Image 1: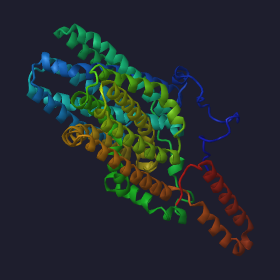
Image 2: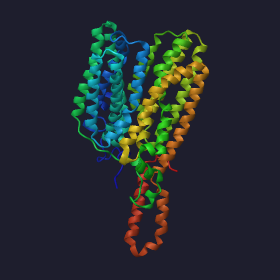
Image 3: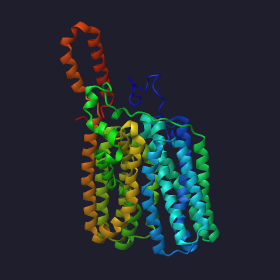
Image 4: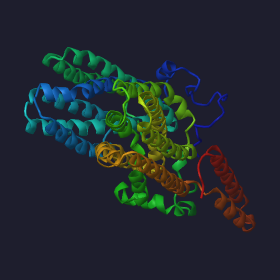
Length: 490
């Protein structure tokens, strides 16, 4: 029986070398879970995000002043690109079940390299529409493949790796945005083109770094593995898992329910990027200079706090609990936004800064729970396809979140924020219950195993060695369950 590696004695010399929580960020980046592969991938991810920062800060101005598109055309362009990006995650997940993740990720980087270079030579709306759509599709596919690589490389310590990846990604994005600020200050056509080329260069460097890694194989997730013989009664007691294997993610209702409920669990992104700035401008007298401060607060908090927050939210039970915390923090943020117009200039400024802080805490909770639960709830033999479907929730939110906030929530005034916060908090309760229920179905049924063993024991006296073996198996199952005391049971 395969022993767990995530909760052993840290003083055991045979235990895997896992970075200590008290280590600094730089030390943990140099020695991440997953070893050399993970270290190179973190560097590639940071380089990729530097390019993303360059692109995000400059693309709208480039399309406006260089290609001379109207605001309406740019809106349609980016909207269609967002919809196209939704297909990136499931497409990457399906391909990852057949081809090496490393090769697919290199292909995504090179695909985006080609499309971004084409942006520089296309000067019409019709030509740019498919180019930018494919760019966003490749972007979402690359992000999914990066996390799938992390799941395989870091194994049971994927939560710690994900925390490091988010810190590296946010730091890279901040560096890219800072470099873009210099180019935007120059404001010439050559400066805008240089920023787009900088994004293209990031894909070359990221692909070269990924090339240096080695292919990693799927690592089983113990929390989602049934106990008992493959054809025994324990396996038969897991209909949800067996049905999921036969049907795949698109026919697995339980998993699709998780993905559907995970869409509102990503609304913090739109609240921070769209809701806060527009609410400040339209409904309060707070100074507009606060808008960049929202992003600064978010970036710094994610870089500094993501590792410690993730360390306190590792494991199935804590991951489901983080869903509830996300709902509560989103509700608090919405209450603060509803109250911001009620005060004067400086009161509104303080309240909005507090809202930015709280929504960032919600983001920290979501980043822990969303991917961890997506992994734990997926069957091991088809995990890539399942994670590809799970990745759609963030893409859908990026397309539907901004229109929801501007067209419904903000149009309703402060009451709209209160309704949104209450709805997200309520859906978080439903999500937490649904995840705990599905994890319970996938958990090892240790009590039932003990009962069956005791029932068979008296009649097994002619075969004493067999009885002893059954008792030993029961002990191992109980020990296995003890090592995963965070796992909710039915």
